[in-house]
Each structure stands twice: as structure tokens, then as C-alpha cells.
Image (cartoon, rainbow, N blue to C red; front, side, top):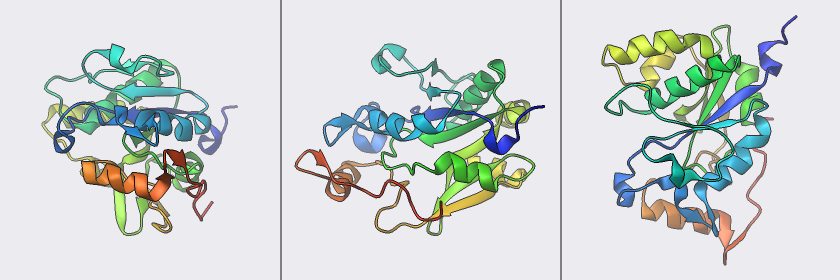
Length: 218
């Protein structure tokens, strides 16, 4: 008998396909925070939660991510149609490995909660879709996805649709919410100001302060 979905291992998918225009271009996950890259910090937080391992969604030369502990997945569709293309790559990778679910996260969110996967699995409805929220804000790319939706997602994208929220709404995604105090666990780094704020919030003099490891609601 197959294990219940809530306890099945998931593939962790880190989205690193953005063009980082507000950061002056380049790969945001390779920016340094407290002496380590954002990607290293995301891997450290997400990796232990994902029994099926990690994958990285990124276009271009994969050599720049040397040392990442999993496959580098380019978009399976042309013209970089946005984060849903990266999610599609993750769903197809999971299906090829016989993995039923994928948890996607942003590659520029270094404070992810350590109970992210467990809580998303706990609230997921029969459709298997669930997303994270902090305060009143929903984070559409930090979500649990069933690999079984990969064909529907490919059709959605090939019709020219790009909105992540609209796709989630279509299937009745559940929401797991975290508080934003003392620190928003889904704080992401979009600008140099954000990077400086993250340094001030979570780190001092190059060494980590103990930001809350586990948000309330576990």
C-alpha cells in the first residue's frame, strides 16, 4: 500500500530563473548574506525537509551552480515564460523519478521555516495543492504541487497563460499561514535595500543571529 500523501517524500524545487533586474542583473541566489550565498541558505533550510532531494530551476550555463546537490533544470518551454515554466520542469522531473509531489520555493528567500513542507502537506486538499502565506500576503511560488498536474500546467502555459495565482485558484489550493513577527520567514531579496535589511534583521558582523528557526503554528 502506498504511504499517505501527507507522509510521502517530496522533491524540493528551488526557483532561480529570475533575471534580477532590480539587483542589476545576474543570479540573485548567488548573492551573499552573512558570508554565504542565498542559495546555500535555502538549501540548508529546505534540504532536510525533502526526502526525495532537491532540484534547481535555472536557465543558462549550469556550471555557475557547481556544488548544488541535485539536478539543474532548464525551462521545458521556450522564451522563459516565467516561474510556472520552472515549476513544470520540477513536476516533470518528479514524475520521471516516481515522486508524487514537489515543494517549490524562491531561491532568494533565506529564512524559510523548517516546518514548511510538513505544514503544506498537512493542509493540502484532495487536489494536493497548497501555498504559503505570511500575514495577509500569499506567496504563490512557495507551494506544494502534485506531479499529476504537469500535463494541465503545460497546456496552461502553451495557451499563453502565465499567472501562478490563477492556476492555483483553478484547483482550489489550500493556504498555510505563518506570522510575520519577529521576522517574515518568506522575506525575499529583490533589491540592494532588501539585502541590507536582511543583513540587519538576521545577521550582525558577519555572524548569524538566531532568527527563529521554527515559526509558530507547527
